[in-house]
Length: 183
Length: 183
DNA sequence: GAAGTCATGTAAACGGTTACATGATTTT
DNA sequence: AAAATCATGTAACCGTTTACATGACTTC
Image (tube, rainbow over all chains, first blue to last red; front, side, top):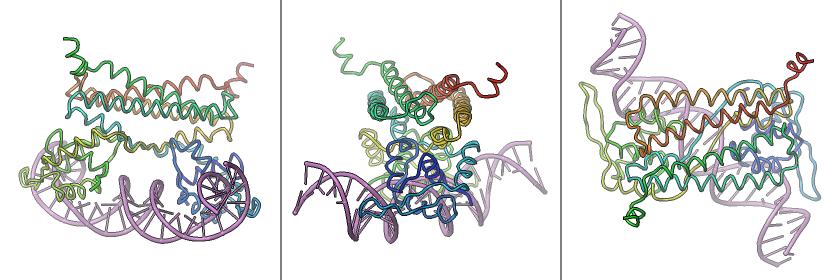
């Protein structure tokens, strides 16, 4: 029974601590979301499947009058998580419309290229700021924490792209309006 | 009629020059593939749709005895391309299983974190090498070519990640085996 | 008492990949 | 003669998102 990457996200989250589907979603939205998103439409059916296969076990744990099912890893589930972590490779996909626009911009002239680079720079600037907010709230910031390493990766990565775009904008020929001013 | 990003890829490609579906696929595989892939299962139906909407026009242009349909942008198609390039934002999605493994690795201890970082470093090293091969073959390498800027972005980006991973590996506590050697 | 949050779930739609089918031409 | 490439296309499948439904509890 081949598990989907999203199933592994769930196993990984439950590897930290037992959680409900709702909590998994919240956790994902504040962490892996930037490189692996998951919606309720995936999480709840997947929890059922993993429970059916005996990799996780759910137990009722209502909060007040709200029903609530908390799942935890079984021994088989922890083994599956360990196996997945050890095996190399995996999906690596990007769909970046801003790069697409940059790529095609030359048919519209250098002004369009500049616009595309500026938009991309701003996007990654904003994303970097978001990640720094998450960093400020993060409890475990020890240097060998892999979740913290991943977060720092995200920040460094977005910083790098923003800076690269800014440098590239500077390399571009000055826009027509500027040139007229200089003349 | 809202166009999908993949429809815009086709419009963009035809903005460079008229092409057949097969040629679009080949072009994509050597360029946008790294940030926006497209399969035949998308390209051919999408070509039909775009032709039905009058954004592109196909004409038979057999090569020898092989039938072949070459598509070119119509005025409406070029306007749609221009409009899309001007509008801000767009899809920005990443699915990176290597980051997922890095993120969750701490439950397995620092050796797993090191393995995850090493795997990621090697992946981006290989990707960078692939892009450099493409660069070596690329005709237009003028600094204001947006396709070349995009390619250089890919190279810089993969280099950066590989170096970041390498630096992070060095920051990690020395593995147990190494420590015993030192004792 | 209204809005927000906690909590679980499903159905429909969507975008995309994979695999397959067909057939001609070119290269080895 | 076989393998590779050119060329077009479709059907089945898959993972994911969106939107919706339900209901209890909490905060303003």
